[in-house]
Length: 251
Image 1 (cartoon, rainbow, N blue to C red):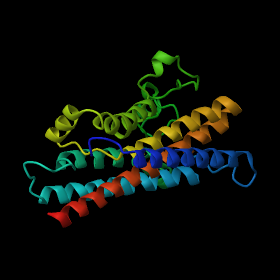
Image 2: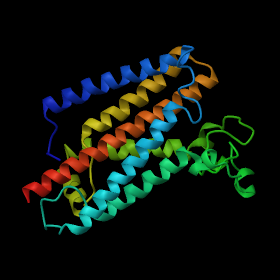
Image 3: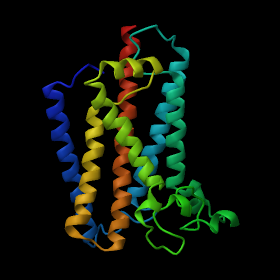
């Protein structure tokens, strides 16, 4: 990444982020219509889009891992990171995609193991719905703030915030951080995508605060928000593929 964000890049990021937030709000307003009120339900359109996007993201990062394994790493000038980062990202998004569809449980209809059902908020085969990682208790009561700090959703939000927004922004102003990132070979997304994540997050929070929807609408909104995140991560992976091809052609 270059040492600074130029004005044009910053303007594009802000404008596109604003449009993304407007689109998010418009999609969620559809929840109040009869025709589209169920797009955010379990196994609905939003969840399926999210699951497919996460799977595709995993595949793309795995392809980048294979390509990086075959490519000799030069001593300097390589900004896409080592193969181990791409493998870690591929495994991460495969896990997220599997969690989105309960690892196929609702597709194939197998029973949830007893040990997992007893501690799972939705009594299904997922890790993120285990009571310890969920914002709700087994009795579907909202946990106090401090007990909900380690929820999967919160950790996932911290992940995109750190990797896609804070890291690119900090690197634009810190030469030492750029050197450290280059030393460890960490692949860093464009700041543009971090703005899209942040815009989606702010739009979701604002939607709930301003409209104060019922609990079911909030649950559907969360599914739509996750699908937006998934599509943005897919765009991030596609951008890495594009950068990898460009780098290969220049080699």
